[in-house]
Length: 86
Image (cartoon, rainbow, N blue to C red; front, side):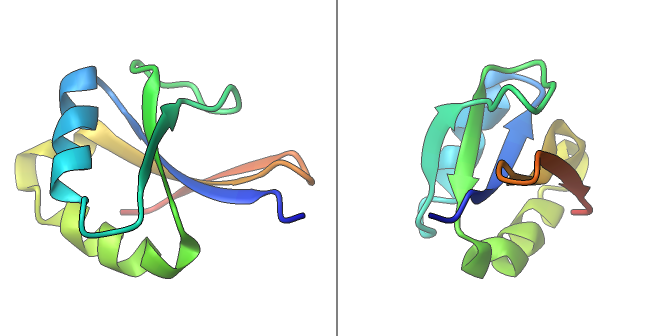
């Protein structure tokens, strides 16, 4: 079973809800923020690796709000959390 996942963590619930609405064309799921990630908001978005580039592009277009989201690759099997550049 694959233990790798891609997650967007947020600075506030407001931004998590905004992102959920704006990223709905992708196969995303709102989840509790994984314990491996420290974030101000308890909500995160889980998404598939195939959507990584498209989601990065979309978040980059948020201009002033793009700093409110951080993207991570979490490998639970190897206990690795890697912050990805947006």
